[in-house]
Image 1 (cartoon, rainbow, N blue to C red):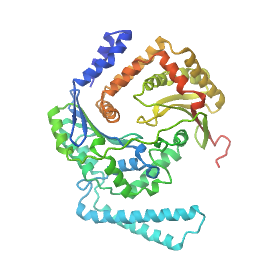
Image 2 (tube, one colour; image 1 turned 120 degrees about the vertical axis):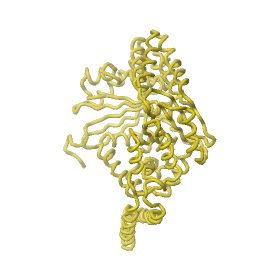
Image 3 (cartoon, helix red, strand yellow; image 1 turned 180 degrees about the horizontal axis):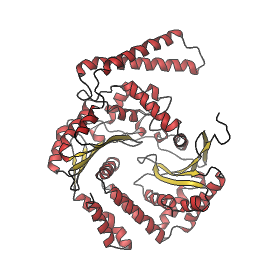
Image 4 (cartoon, rainbow, N blue to C red; image 1 turned 135 degrees about the horizontal axis):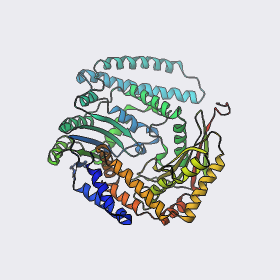
Length: 517
């Protein structure tokens, strides 16, 4: 497991100063290239295979170029819900007798959709302040009872979590998934001789999915949203921040969806979303670990070549336009106070993006970073301070964001003035060569740590291949970072981080004054 990291460390320590920085990532990319095979099937699916390590294991990642950004407002949350649903099995997995189960699945979909439509109709009456007709309430009661009975009948045929059980019996580690604004990812680590089991299960997941337990799982997601957003001060602040910061772009929608929309996400819309987006031309597989390239390629071609290629998605017509003028809002929640500050900026691979990566480390990474030194250690006005470049996604224009947890007694104006002072100082004086070199060395060190793990490598290779067209953009990004100069940082602070371009959100603790209305 230390082989690649040891190589990188030796390579980095052989040279010194600027020379080391200039040569480090081109040499690292070459080392990767010698260990990678990239294949592309006729249906558009791309697979990145990398030989690594002596342990007979593989990290297996499948990514789809679909996330919350690809939803309409009415679909908000559907990408994340679909991720949940694809763990519910197929015609072959998760059922004791699909031919018998199917009739209940069909009826559940029909009556569940009808019940959703009646629920929306009832909500319209209530929102208009009108009396809900008794006939409508009676229909809802009858259909709710019918749906419950059908779900109980279907349940007798369902083998819950059968895919997890199969993987557990074959030595899995880290079987999981995630949905972001930009991508949906499915991941697992297995012994190398279990590759075909993985290919068979995952291709079946894409060819024969059954969205069983749709309505119960939808309730699970509604509860997940309640816990992670409504009951979380940070979640409330983050959701409000992006709804204010983005005025038109789909990044303004939360990945988990809206509280008012989740209860009415339709199963037919979820199926359509799957068919339109889970296509091989929007898909990348990464296989990293101990393997024979020819054998791995043969297995991937055997199980994934017959996936039907989908239509290419047309580019978004909407692009976020920022008008000059500060945006400011506050939210009330029984949580410790927090502040978010953000500025709209271009995404990678724009030439200015790398300077933001360096600026993020300069301001908030480590005890010696500038805002940590000023706000946490010197002024003691903040408990912590952090930052993110490329938030909430990286496919489109995004935000450079600061996250501050102030002390309970703090002056918001003083804190904002302090941050402004630090930014103005950078704009005026720049950053010394010594400080820049220290930051870049820290970033290289973090890169080395991430490249010490098959799963991290598979995650990164599939991500860069999917979003930017080639896995080696991972190294191009770091080449750009190492090329950042003081003037570049001064430029982005002046150009993007002005007072007239900032969005500021403040979470106020309603418990402080005993007012929780």
